[in-house]
Image (cartoon, rainbow, N blue to C red; front, side, top):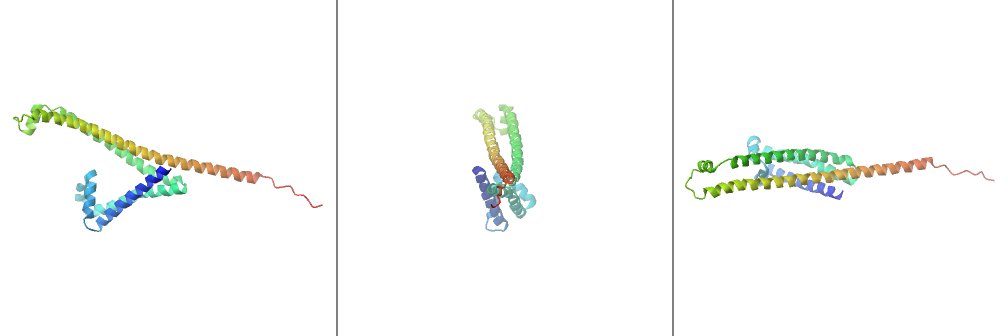
Length: 213
């Protein structure tokens, strides 16, 4: 249960940091908006989205989306502190949806990369010569082999990184699920003990009454 609490706290810290960062950028504080976008651009086609909706709209949308995404972390922390397992369910549901999406994306990414390798390996030296336009290059054969070998190594690295990332994500989710089940079981045990105590107290006979002599 301690691990689940740490996960919730880290999620809250990351969420609050992201909200503050994006909010300051949306309010035009320095160049934080552009730095924020530059950071996010490493994980997706952010510039295309900004070109469509605009920088300010993107930053405010990021603030709202992050706030919504951080709510389950706050609820989970409250549920752990108060021994109320129901507050962990939003986190479990939302994170499982995210994990499924990431898993599907990982499979598609690996499949596309493998398809690219198939295309590259289907080329011969003449095809590469036509692409480069330099048939007199003495290192052309080595370049061709390096490209083929590099794409294969890249696929292996990509598959390993995505496999580890997915496994870590499901492992973290399982930690929170175990905390949810533990809290639920403890509440059930405590409720059962309370009911047994109340029943014994109710069924206990009153002491005998003796009339004075």
